[in-house]
Image (cartoon, rainbow, N blue to C red; front, top):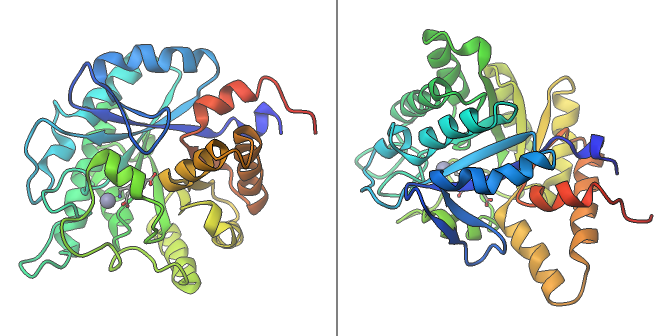
Length: 311
Ligand code: PBG
Ligand code: ZN
């Protein structure tokens, strides 16, 4: 594997609203919640090593969350502040932002709810579109809706168009997102576990290959620019399906927090070499058809790529 093949690895990290924070994330070795004032220290060395692209996730801890996720597009909130800061500090870096409400709602669900606790689709997609527009206005090159609700890509594209942002904002859709047990470390990191119920009504069951294929086609029809499959390793067949269904689209896969934790745990247990394990997963994503990989291992990969292992 060469640097050229990996260059699309997208660094992923968590931003919090405490400007000076560097809080270790218990279940994710080497991962922290970063404050905006420490982005230079964190990203500077990575950009020097070739980091080209990042995706940010907001973790508000200071202000109170509400039912509609007002904090998602708070101008003083972590995501908008981080987007502006990264654009200013590192003009060459491509900045993407995860768009969802679960990190910001009091109930921890990805949308706005009806009285009976079910998702209000039209209110949810209108709210997601507002948030996406706010991130694009702040300077995000790419917005990445991770909620899986019907018609949100359409709503986001219309919102961007109304604000004259459509031409310069990429929409990366979490198209085939499975209700996985591998999001545990992420939810712990961002304290976004739903307070009741689960996400099965808007995320796919593990065995739903047909629904995943339909969701990919749906997002292409709604106008997504990049299609994503998540998690990555347990869903390589879906990734290969997406490559076939959307041959002319950039295809992303998301190596999620549980995959990251699993690989570390394997290495820590002495039953595998971390670097070899990680590189093998990367090769498998590329082989299945991915052209873009979102991974928490990006910092390590930037180093490893400079010294290829003997075959
Ligand atoms: C928010 C979101 C999640 C992840 C990315 N965006 C969590 C979820 O759906 O529960 C998962 C990230 C990971 O596990 O690394 N919708
Ligand atoms: Zn969500």
